[in-house]
Image 1 (cartoon, one colour):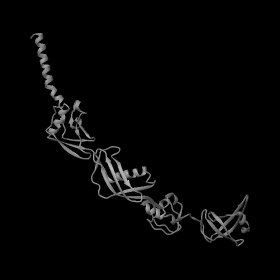
Image 2 (cartoon, rainbow, N blue to C red):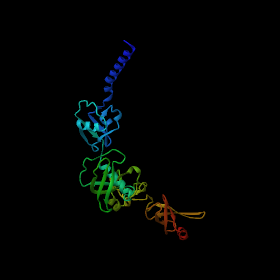
Image 3 (cartoon, rainbow, N blue to C red):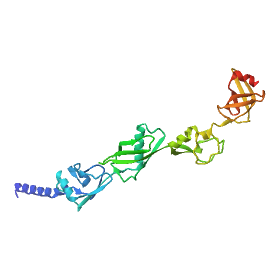
Image 4 (tube, rainbow, N blue to C red):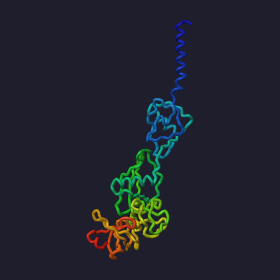
Length: 320
């Protein structure tokens, strides 16, 4: 064999091997079941080994939270449009395409309405809102993301509990229209166990539970920090709502108690024994019978069993 004949035969063999190997490297393989998280289905979503066509769009995905089937014929037509004419169908006649979605629940509805009202200045700090829908919420999905739903229109008049709202849902073409009633609540103090009259309230005695804003306004509900250290004025049972009228400052001077009555005037302090004629908390006014002069004076309860006279000019004579 001449050198020229050898080169020709070698070139032919190489060409044949390339022809035999090339088809095995070229064809993408069709998947039978796919899931996407965007509105467009690409070649890489639909095929394994998508090659240079990987990021090419084939068709639109179904609505968020739904699924559908695409026929092999529809896939061939879409693939041909982008130049993908050969692929391995892997025996599939249809491909199931599902799209991820976020289920819209009542909690999300409440959070969106609360944020809208708060931004509008209609929801004071510490106030909560719950939406009661006029109809049951149907299964509705939005595309995943930071803001799956957004209020487009909201109608509500303060003092009237009825509302209507229109939401724009991410990935959906149709809005979500809802209506119903709004209920506003605040957290209010309730007793964790029964207390007898005169008991001083400690943190463990109180738990916060929601009540309507209307009830809170009518009852006069104090803040938690304003209750600790207060004294209940009556016997109260477990679970009852604690109102401002139910508590008072702890009594540091009790009626008929023998107390110390004193007057400070510059460097001089004059003290005598007296008998309290009424109960008084710290800073409260109290009438005291001076046991030395048998006169009644008025003072301010400043400590346990201690009263300071209010008006030095008139009190000095009464103390003597």
